[in-house]
Amino acid sequence: MLESSNLLRIPGPTPIPGCVTRAMSKPMIGHRTEEAKQLLIRLKEKIKPVFGTNQDVIILAGSGSAGLEAAIVNITDVGDEVLVLVSGNFGERFAEICEVYGLKVHRIEVEWGKAIDPQEVEVYIQKNPNIKAVFVTSCETSTGVLNPIPEITAAVREHSNALVAVDGVSSVGGVDTQMDAWGVDVLVTGSQKAMMLPPGLCFVAASERAWEVIHENKRPRYFLDLRKYLNNAAPYTPAVSLLMGLEAALDLIAEEGLENVYARHLTMMEMTRAAVKALGIPLLTDEESAAPTVTTLVPADFEGDKLRKQLKADFGLELAGGQKHLKGKVVRIGHMGYCAPADVLQVISLLETGLQRIGKDITPGQGIQAAQAVFLQSGGQA
Image 1: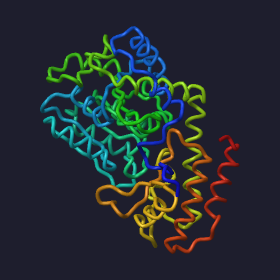
Image 2 (image 1 turned 120 degrees about the vertical axis):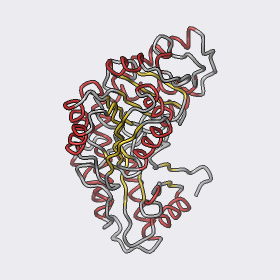
Image 3 (image 1 turned 180 degrees about the horizontal axis):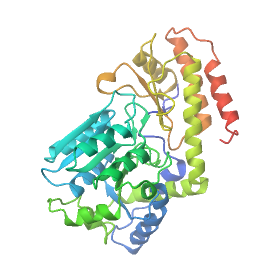
């Protein structure tokens, strides 16, 4: 294996397009200059379609978790009752942040690998009228589940005035997202997933009714106070190089067209799932709740971590393992952002070789054939 060989197919960070890398390598500019101001003005408009919103999308220097924390501290105050929908590790993180900030946390929890049931949310909301906000993860990265955000939001809005805040870190930019049309009140994502950037930025958009709550909220907050970013897009030193890269990434998305971006992710998901099934490996999620950005395998007759180590040693291919109680029990394949069907075919080919290397009995080519069939049925657009 070549020393520089590194095939990154984890659910984030994801590979970076060359044009984005080149944009981030441009000479540094002053963050208070007219050039920086114009960059932020352009970004403000270019990012709105990715969120499916006409609202301002605030750009913060920080990880996706900073965005989740910003959502919580801006729309809640100490003692508020909130409902957190937990379908995996990152739903649990939402709940943990809420508890740190002194909120009374209600939970609806489902088995990892299952999606949240909107009807269960509807019933819970009706029985607990004091809930001020509902927090939910769109794509649960730890499992590869895509939760039904439109249906969940509708269930909440029909029976309460609670705000709905969504962790879209592993979905925005790779999954059809319509913040305004769905009635989502706060939507958060990060830079290092489908947005095709390194870690270091998070993005937060809020609805008009969420802004009413934010402006009236008496909770102390400083760097994460979203009000400060409304009339000054960069009240604190921004991550200038990442902003330059963000413009290049958004231009790539616009050039491909959002519908084509979403179709590509669906095709890659279907290719991966078909290949894994053909190789006789169980999947954690069912067809209805599978995420277009990450697929989770559940090895039944081989060790997932052994396969991952073999693939890394032989080919520099990096897949992700499990988290919390799934550690050592699952293998996660990321297919989001700067990733194409050709990359999926490469991963499946190497996966087959790795399986043979660790002693699993497979028919070589079965996975590739299944993935190719899906690609051809999709119209063959790479």
